[in-house]
Image (cartoon, rainbow, N blue to C red; front, side, top):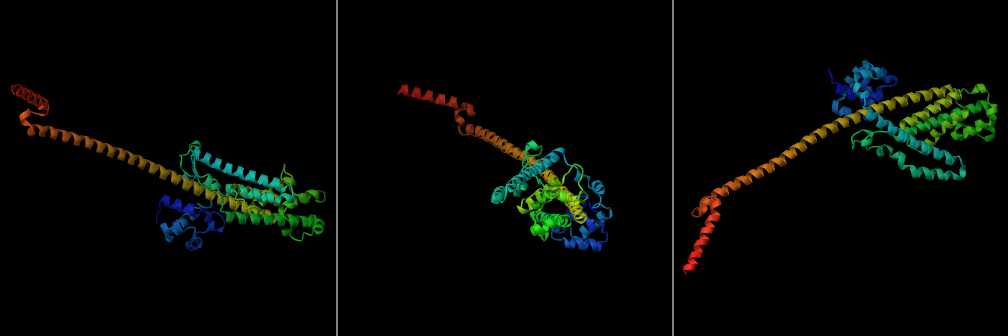
Length: 385
């Protein structure tokens, strides 16, 4: 059966996060596609309600066979409009992302500064974070109104900057923090076992991520150079401290823009690679790729929603303009009809008055002559009396 480009586009956008990565992208059989759709029935309920399951499954099979989910090249060829945004829209979206990144960076810098002054000011961190809670939590809504300065129509909301749900962010950050603490602990167990013994650290959970930087830096002379692999231009201190932001965002529950979250995952990947933990480096690499894929899926979906809204609002504006024209025409017609009615009444009265006062002259214009004649007759009668 043939389906329209609009129908295929909607299915692609709704199902892209499900079928883009992993084994799902390789599925071709109808039974397997249906099983995956059934598994994700709740988030797809609007699509299923409008199209029906059979139609969705059939469109998905067609897209999968053409490798639309696997290849962005194929996706661009199939749905070119999804990948084309106006320069003004791109600028607006980048500005939103940059503003959100700057806000979270300032907040993390302040936390780093406060925590660096010691435990006696730990409560200061909480008070600062709580005072700033509303800003990152409401960032998406706060950036929701566009302005003429950004080159977009006033009153059109934006879905940027891009955030994952907090539950997803919390899951990612907690898992990443735990993996990094395990990575550092195993590194120390191999190269600094006496430090672990002297401090009574018998498991990874005993040491918070930010505590590893001073420990490793203090005992750096005991660690063989070959035990650490750093990219050109980086130091272990820089690589370790870069992961502190991940820890701060996790511990202080800071809603973080999705792209900034993915940068934290890249920092975690860099540290795991530096400490030669191939297992966790592979995990972080996979997480980074999956997160990047989901960010791209969200961007395409948000862009499509914004573009659809823009077209809908343009259509509404055109209809509103036509309705305004019709409204003005109705008002003009009423005034014109009223003028015609007044003219008709004037003619009817002009015709009636001579008939009613025929002895005083012909036509309404004779009314003054009649009045003067009557006045003169009265004066003559008075003189004769």
